[in-house]
Length: 131
Length: 134
Image 1 (spheres, rainbow over the protein chains, first blue to last red):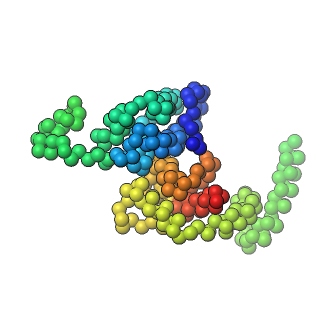
Image 2: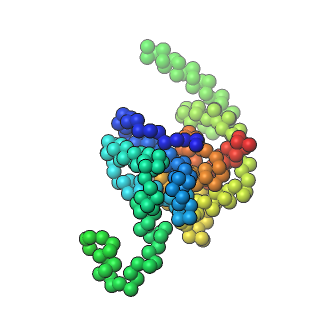
Image 3: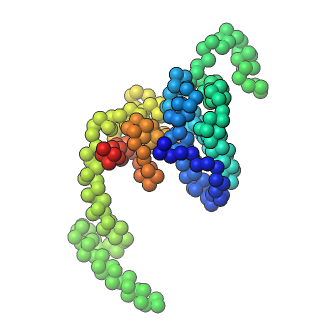
């Protein structure tokens, strides 16, 4: 593989937001380049396509896009790299990958079978604790 | 020391003037605009070779961009539209580049990555990388 995941080598803190941003993009690129391996290891070719996985990774990164402290960004990157390492070295199993990343996302697995006939209250209840 | 540097500056401007006069008949402006352009000779050469991006490459790039950014079908995409015009933030741009990498089976290096801002540039880079690979 052209770019293997860099095994966890704690690098010094990013000096500026710009450097943290660059690290985020490098992490994203590493993740995208490991997607074919991941699909091969866990045999998820029939459930998702690489494009969908890419957009899942992007949305996870985007969830934290509002953060402006470089140290926090570094910490999140560390956690992300650790997660990616765990996935690539097959420390997880297929149901972990599917449950954590694939299922429950409306654009990928539309919840067709679930509770269409339920009331509005029930729908909110299933979605979250607070409504 | 100050006088020496002033002399140096004067001599530099005197060298610059002939360039300016050759390039344009405008009024003699001692602005630094012209000075930065002299390496532009190589840039213009680069531009000529990269105008040769094939139509189907540009079309494929447009298709990928359209799918990635979920654009409505009637939104006009020309090769000159930048990704930010279409509402993409920087993560979207990286994602588009990743999509292109996968589609054309190439690997974009770090320094090339930052230059891509519009569709034409992306298509040109792809052409170059595909030609280098084969």
